[in-house]
Length: 193
Image 1: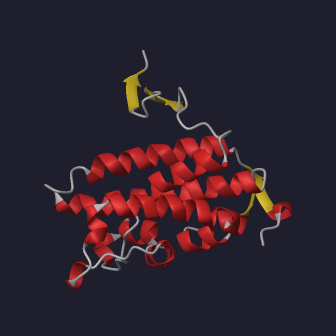
Image 2 (image 1 turned 60 degrees about the horizontal axis):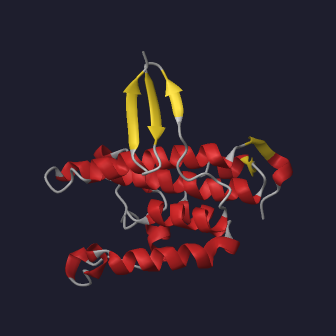
């Protein structure tokens, strides 16, 4: 079990949620190009995995009042992060199963394109996707069936922790941009001026 007393520093779950949502939005935008540019799958997979990691760590930050041990803060293994959250499993799996039921990709069940649907299996196989897919040239790819996971985790966080804002008015300011998420959930970037 996690020991909050060995934590690196106190983290704000709302800011973690914001960051996860930014990476999720980038992944979706890149993935939308994949049908015409298949190589775009790799950066999208990396960003889907990264946003999922941040959302899982957001739930850990809520559970431990912002105090996440170093070994967890630096861990990218999605299944290990998920396993640290047994109290959330039923809710996350409920949203996962609903997402899988709607997704045509997960209905392919034969030949080399067989897609796994069990969340724990997908988490185990794709556990290191963030690390592996950002280095495609190393040819060390892992199975990846976690595209719906960021949205599943957003739904689970919204259900389990309604105090964590879903769509903040302003995410961040960094020169020369202002990045905002509006109530419709869309990300907007504007030049500061």
